[in-house]
Length: 56
Image 1 (cartoon, one colour):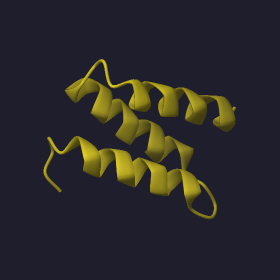
Image 2 (cartoon, helix red, strand yellow; image 1 turned 90 degrees about the horizontal axis):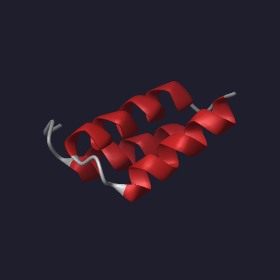
Image 3 (cartoon, helix red, strand yellow; image 1 turned 120 degrees about the vertical axis):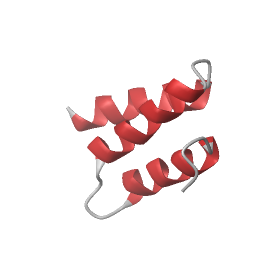
Image 4 (cartoon, helix red, strand yellow; image 1 turned 45 degrees about the horizontal axis):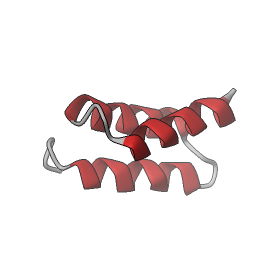
């Protein structure tokens, strides 16, 4: 995977959230990678927040 391809991180993170059982830690890591590449990415910020909330 191209380390700068934001869409790849986003799709993989979403698939981690939808897997059985969900892997919120991996999703959070991928959303964090997106935020590092694009700090104002609203979707990544929102989805990461949801993953943190659901995880706890």
